[in-house]
Length: 297
Image (cartoon, rainbow, N blue to C red; front, top):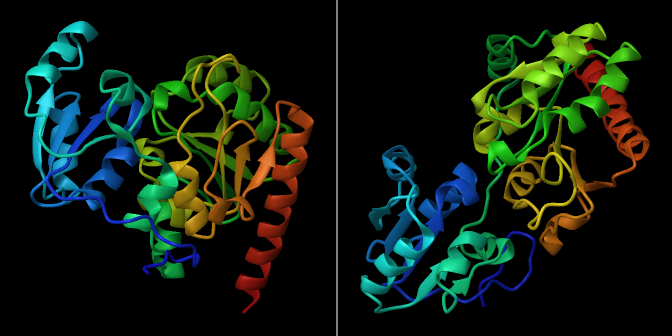
């Protein structure tokens, strides 16, 4: 029997000639990247998205046949298009939107993805890490926290920035890496500029691709949906799985399910903002001590 890296029994390999249905906006780049590693050569990917999404999927090494379904049309029309498509083989839904369009499809879970396409840890030389952080605009003395997301528009900058700003006001040299399309970014910039900690926010699209930015982070956060907690669906835990696998201390909101193999490594926080502040403060304090030791060598 095959096993995962954590030693847990792996899920059985899915049959070839499967149809992978994925909604690009819902699954995000992190979902598309895992699909590319998961799909087999004689599979097909039905991608609900645009040409840029299809190009990204192809650029990540997807060997399956990619068919693009328009995302900007009425859902009933998409259902009709799906009903007319080739129904042979097994259907796999990669996100909640895809599952709602194809109720009979197998809804793939994060643990199943990891069993069949594990995330491996990649090391980065200290010199390369330092150079990459400098290119981002992060000083040597600053700690970088990434606000993770699978869909940028569903991540709320203000909630996370409020946590980080408390530490910044205590003169902790901390930056928050956010995506330019995240909710309430403009409001956050104005608010924290007035507080005198506007430098805290670092805007870069890299955060949407945790396989690229994880080695540069000192810590990460995956919060619930924006701007309130009343969202119907919690975000995918895949971005946090990436950072946890890379050894980055990661705070994950209590409402988000994690694979069992990752649960012990995550730092949970709740809607109590002081709870999140204390958790992040401990993480950054430990990281700062580690950096001090590294520099002393």
